Length: 56
Length: 288
Image 1 (cartoon, rainbow over the protein chains, first blue to last red):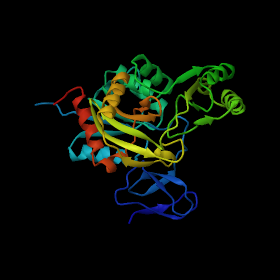
Image 2: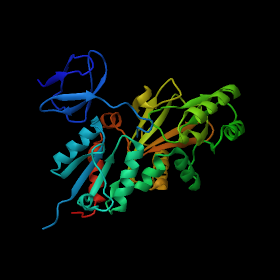
Image 3: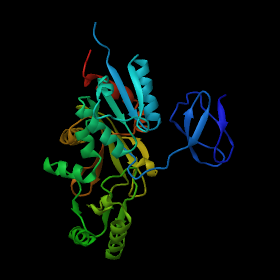
Image 4: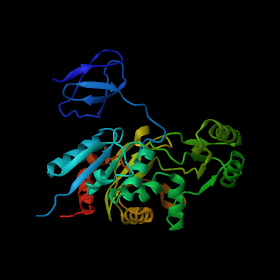
């Protein structure tokens, strides 16, 4: 099971089987949004904050 | 031997919609590249690297970066889904309303002004309550239902002073007493693929703000209005938001050009992602 640690709270973050780069996942402990920067090796970063012009 | 179509997917993050689109491309064995709009650049003296793409599907999460990418790509001769012209209209609520008004498409009563004083006058033409929306924005963000003059004065001053210059283009819309829902249709080309009610107790019915999706029958009226609206803004891959006005009946509220469909696809059973890919292939430069 692919996993890494949350950069905010260090909790273990588990990747789903179909995890992909640039996907947003949520830290189960602190609730922060994380962006997957690499699946192999696993790494995440804090997801960029929503900007005023984001959307559909 | 016919050249294989080369597709680019311009994106910012891998949402479920992008996963589905990548999956549809892979299932078709398509030749495609993922283009992260945070890492790409455009050399205006050298468009060749971009011209290798026969079509680019734009899935940028930011309107401005997506729009400028489309403008540059189209200027390089690269077909995009959607075109820069369509994105430019749909991403700006005022331009969308002006375009729909030009073509006689039923929509809410909309006004615009460029100073808080003029906006207040315009608001009082419609009367309270009234809705203020940013001309660029999505996911139900920064919408204001203004119930009286005191609130209008306060919100207009705040937008004029605290917002970016874009917030000084005031977009004023009549408040519509909806029947607890609105309707989102997905239009690709000249077909309405699905329709969904977005139900909410709140006047803002976006699913991003908690609205719940429920399948909606595609009536002839819904189909006709959706297709007219799509044609008016230039057509492509569009999500049309319709509202049931108590007096006017079915009207168009807004049109989205980089649509999300994480609720519409599973609800309808329509493989919207694959339909987008199919549409892109049909509109590519070197069609097989």
